[in-house]
Image (tube, rainbow, N blue to C red):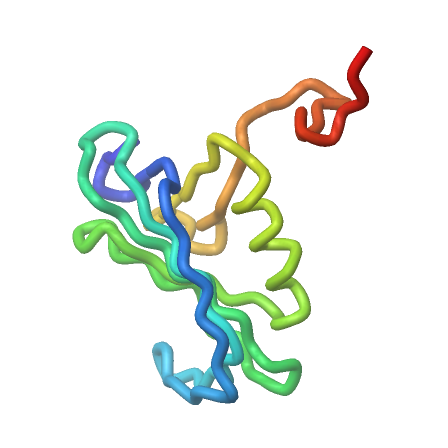
Length: 129
């Protein structure tokens, strides 16, 4: 879906970046960045390249509002550094997974899986017959 306000892309790659500390301003808010997970992929409607940067902030950091630039096919959201392991775990273990850039409601910018039946797990960890 790419109507100028919303874009959905399938995340095909991600990169984890750890930082000692980076301070960067986003719309007048000074964020204290400890980690970054860059998610990239291909648009569901247009096959263009998209990117969503998920910044993981130190506990004492102010939290900027989500950043969405549909025309540039990119966005950024901000989370606490304590959430980085759970976030990377989802990227490693779920498929397919999607990025949603929401220009209409930037606070709804997200990463999602598809609907799965209850009890579905990693086949590598299931006990055979």
